Image (cartoon, rainbow over the protein chains, first blue to last red):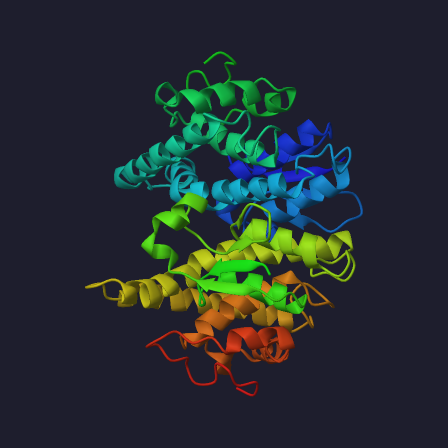
Length: 225
Length: 225
């Protein structure tokens, strides 16, 4: 069985788990804290990031770009039934929005909220910076406006079909939602899309996650939130 | 002929140009300043990033991940002769190092140096922050140590064959080298690799680039530097 080295609130790890669940691939989850930079982690990945996918007899697949490409190549039911659309223009739109989520949303919102609320909680004497959280949440408002604008005319984020870009955005929003940082009241279009993707069987694995000593925000696991 | 909307010292644009040149695809270059956020740019790409690839009769392909995947799909001579290795483990290593360059090296070094030296130079009254440049250059030293360590045992960065990860790293280092920020004296292994990749015909397009009022650092275009 493949093994996924991950952190349960890390959005890149959640993206890998959503893909594996969607493709019906059972997986052993090994939860680590990448920010503690244990020597065993650094030996496999000097960047000290997760996810890392380990399949029998193969060297570890390291980092979110390598992992999503490996899962797609090894486990998609077929090239046309996978999470990357077959047609060039939908494929380009999927990559554009993947980059938006993995690079822009992550850089402007998610990485700061994870750092302040999860990593610092784990470091003796460290306390979250209210100023950083305030900026990250203001940035999230701008991102949600853009997603609302997209979902006003699209059933899924890259067009008519669900793609990996939907899973990437859902992975990030689910981490932020666990921490209580998503204002669903003011994001009607994105909320409708999130309710739809949240009710997919693949999503169940994420909704059962709990971090010790840090309960999920109200509504996190409710399909009717 | 395809058109590439780009900035000549933007490393992601340089990566796209290296790929196109390697595959022998002539391209019209349209040089813009993405940081001025012109309405025509924002309409195509609300993230205000380059490169953007425009091929006849197709909608624009936006962002570095979409562009590299589109160039590979449309212009690689064959799946085995392209810049993504055919074997799974080399492919995973290529994606790992692409992520290293596009996300980690960019986040810790290149984006700061471009912002301080190129973007601020273009903004009336803005001056580079010496503290930011100092941190970015200290980070670059750490990255070079890692690249030296890799090149001590590898001919190309992901293994025995040249891959897209080599082009990504070369694109970033060439921008930094134009600005005089690479200490080649202390990076013997990486310098040997850079001399090799710099002498490929595909590299010529970059070596002829000049930014008005900002001459290239000594040695930028020399094959023997």
